[in-house]
Picture 1 (cartoon, rainbow, N blue to C red):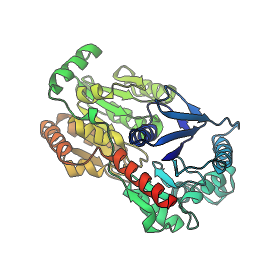
Picture 2: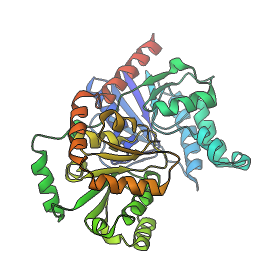
Picture 3: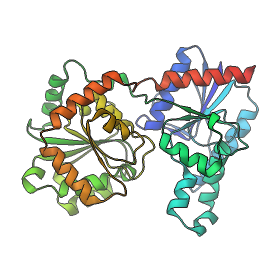
Length: 376
């Protein structure tokens, strides 16, 4: 089949981007022809991908999104694809991979009337309506049941257009037989002592992921415990504001920003606790990656994948609405808890039993099924 995959930007370390790549590669391995449309591509182009870069110019992100959507729609009208799959909200899609939360629900919750008069709101609301509105035929690959309710409430999207997917973490996140030796090697190579407590955050977008919350929680630890604790951050983000905050809190020497990395499994094995205190999070892939590596988790309960922490009995959740002092106490309690070894065991046990890996295959099945139905 000839398939078109569409997204605003590709870079190697984004969660949405990783899901796109694995789904498209799965389709390619099944013999499908893959065309990719994007504004920007960073990194190597996989063999078998036909890349189309659509150049657009505008001073704002929403302006570029609108310009890309218009140019893409025009290009796609001249082509003949069995299925068009979008990883951002765009008109004319056969399927949309719902990695982002409901924009309209957040706008209603966080903004007043005058926000709805802005060009930013009008642009993103129109793009979302093109996917979820009752007049649309786009079917949705859903990765968060939390957001499904928001989309139905805002747009009246029919139930039959949703297809729920399991998580799709890389199998290399699963703890190997020599996990203990790899943990020791990681700490030795990075210069961390065996008795140091390593907190880990994984994901791009430091503000959304709640890096400020983690810094404040680490700063609130008793001095003796804080001096044994380090915060390791893997992913892309704006460093300056958080380095400034770390200095203000007196924990700058405890913070390590690594940027985007392709050796995340080594960090998962080397750490003692994953932190995911996100402001909002459609899924939170790092949560299930941590469980697969046997790493206990402290996350906010608003993360789409937070329920896996409870399902596995492998950590704790910060209740919403968020209170910093609660996060502070839970972090301290977990670091000194005798439950850490049990949580680690429970995480490994859960990861061997639960389906945390089949998202690409399941998504490819749905894409090819819809494409065949469309062709007939």
